[in-house]
Each structure stands twice: as C-alpha cells, then as structure tokens.
Length: 272
Image 1 (tube, one colour):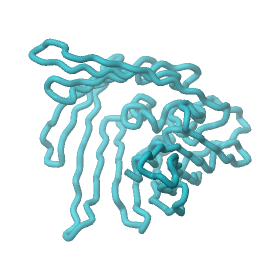
Image 2 (cartoon, helix red, strand yellow):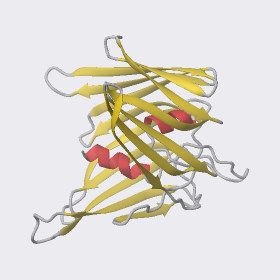
Image 3 (cartoon, one colour):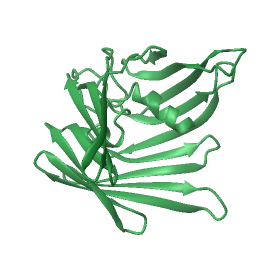
Image 4 (spheres, rainbow, N blue to C red):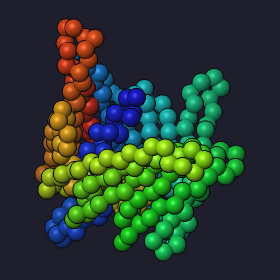
C-alpha cells in the first residue's frame, strides 16, 4: 500500500513526452526518486524506499531498480530495444524470505501500424494472454483488457499540447454474450507550465502510458484535479521539480478525535 501511494504521487508530477526546449535549457533525467510516506497527519514521515533509473545513450529507460527503506532490493524492471522499437519488458520481484527467490513476468511487444500487440508470459515462459494497444502519432490512445471471461475494462485518453487532459474509463460485464452492466466515467486533468521530471525521457510514450498511465501523464506537472488533494512543488534553478508534497484528506468516521485525517506523501528527485 505504501508503494501504491508513492506511485500515485509520482502520477501527479511525472511525464513521458519529450518537450521541445531552448538550446540553453539543461537536459536532465531523474536518477533517484525517494519516497517518504506519512500515515495520518499526526504520524512522523518515514522513508519508504527509492527507485534508481538507468538510461541508454538515447535517454531511454533501460532499467528501474526499486529498494526498500532498509536498502534491500525489492523489484527490477528491465526494458529491451531493437533499433527504435521497444520489444520487451521484464519485471522481477525479489521475495525476501528464507530462502530468497525471484518471481518474474515478461511482456513482448509487436508493433503493426497504429496497434501494438502485448503478449504476456509468466516466469516459466508460458504465454498467459494478449492485449491490443491503439496508438496515434506515438501517443497511447486506448486499451481493452479482458480481465475475466465475462468482464472487461477499457481506458482511453485525450491529449492537448502533449498532456493527457481527459481519461475515460469503461467497464462492461457480460453473461452468455449479453451485457448485464456497463458503466463509465471521466477524469479531467490540468497542468502547470513547468518542466516535468521526465520531460527529456525518450522511452516511447505509448509504453510509459501503458505501463504507468498515472505515472507519465504529460509533459508538465499535474496540478490538483479533485477536492481534498493538495500538491506542492519545489523546483531547482532550471525549473525541474525536486520535491513534491502530496496531501490527501481522508474522512474516518470511526476516529472520534480527528474525524478528517490527512495522508501525506513526499517525493524527492535527484537528477543525473
């Protein structure tokens, strides 16, 4: 849960699209992102862990290594490219028990026109299913995920100036080919005019939005989009965010002393 909240905070600030910059602008890429979580507002913030990013000569992500607060490695995400195309993603999770062992999962990407077929494999190499991604001009538009035999979900995105401005969610439940329930909702997003941490990252946008649709949502920093959320940024002299403090109000009717609590998340970003 701590790391899930951490990624939700990055979702408010991180970016996938490459933004045109003046020749005098510095080119930075995140090297280490440290997560500090706080339970409710009366708790002291404690380090939750950190992620280290590695890139190739084209500024594309090749590896993300995640570490717990005690320094133990918990996950790795490895990306493989052939020419300009991203062709494979491998996620390894370290199970820190006795004896320690790895759990891996692999995705293979095959691009054809404006579609990308994603094939999933488990750690033994057995195929576990496929998903079709629709892309336009390199931007990830939608995906349809058959979650269960009679239940599926679709997410589609709209863009403006390289930022996702609206996400549309649709869930359908069927029985014997007949639609029983169908519901949908939309989320609108707004952005500031500052550089995002990943503005110079050249990893394909469709992948970043597919794997981390909230993590990389535009080329600027997402601002508050819902009541009860407060996002505060600190920037370096080049205009890149170095810290994001995300505060979310939580109503807990069982807490007679506090009633409304606050979950606080702080992210520190160091660049290479």
